[in-house]
Image (cartoon, rainbow, N blue to C red; front, side, top):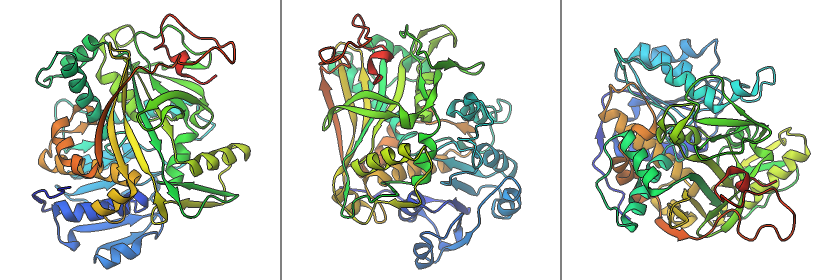
Length: 472
């Protein structure tokens, strides 16, 4: 696969905040695709994991956990106009960092909108305030129409990030297959009209991780193919999903938000204890964890037609994630511990012996039933394409670097979401790193094979209702 691109010129400094699994995987891509001297990079991280790689590359690094009390003192000397803060940390407020970058004239990108430490699980706060919905609204509130300011890209990794571009590509593929081939829509409204005409009622970010490590999970250990703290914080958040205009059964534990876009609802239960039915080409039908993710909100909002509270059209959007099998075992043990994290944490990367990460978007409800479009990336492919990466991390890190390059070329756009960026440009960069890009049709519905074992509460008149996807 050809991963050669002309290197992007950049005169400023890049501050890489966080150097865990994703930070370590991003570094070789930054050095490959941006014309940088080691002196232009500095790494700031809460722990020293991976610092050996920074030392080998001659890159300055410092161990420091950022807090509300010290982040300004630590970062202000490192950020001048035209510099770039690449935030790949956890437990550091994205909103605080974006505001600081705006003051300093620096560019910004993160892979997830984060609160300060403990913000996801602070039981003193109502569930609505611990949601990705609330974090997104706070970040979007930094926008200014009079002076956009330096570009700050929100949540641009794999998902959130890459999947927003895959949705648009999938819509065009679906349109072409239905004799509606057309140029890419030029506006948000045109994209929403296309999805409406195609009859897309539900969009799943449908992911099945098949990776296997030579060292299997042992008791009192949580293993994962990417950041354990990052994943567990997502698992313990309230469930969130974009809420479609066709939905007619608000769940008993479902709640609407008091303000904002009204594009999503939340459930009064964590994603770690909530499953939904979904489908990928390799897995077929599967049960995935319904994980709260920013793309479920931003995609649903982007494809809304009409008023926020009574839209003419909006798809239901959710993330249905089946991690690798040893992570599922880790989750089962975590639940048995009443959500108290195991004492040993391990990221699976160098010891993985086989498997692929199947990450894509599943468009449902149209005349063809179901259409999945996405990346199927194997361990062998990922290792050949970029050092310090496995399939899961590479799907994230290539999305991060694509967003960084776009921000460098477009430095004065203010706060930007993935859905507002040029999907073709991003996918052109990412495609060589994604293994097989696969499109697959299916006649699967969440009602398939149901009703013979238990008397379930189903809406058999409309298979695309959320209640049919939820595992009861």
